Image (cartoon, rainbow, N blue to C red; front, top):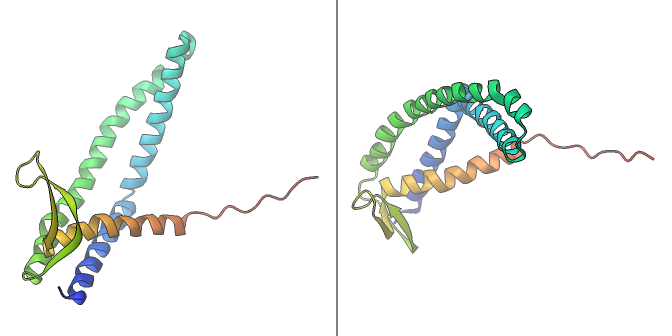
Length: 166
């Protein structure tokens, strides 16, 4: 196992994760999806609260918002398709390219992790040895995800301490 190759593959995975996130944010796909989900969740919460209380007036008032959530569901599906249109070309090009660059690379972890969809679709096997392709995806998921969480915390607006009023 070559440390430089391991780090190179991991960096490529992290950069790929960041690039996909950047593209989704630049196209406002992530933001729109979050807004729609937040709106739909709030309406559903209000609806079920009114339903449990049997508040017919509130249920009638929520009717237009419920229709809007149905329209939002179609919009959400479109946005998820756009996300897929960005993700699929990446998934079909970058990992195989990494595999072709580092075809002799293998890494053995000190522990086994579950790998779904191998050898059959509904089967989960445990593995500890991966090639460049597998190491890229592990790095993409775990290191890319960790990087996303760290960046989200760093970019979170700072809350200023409130002054006490006497």
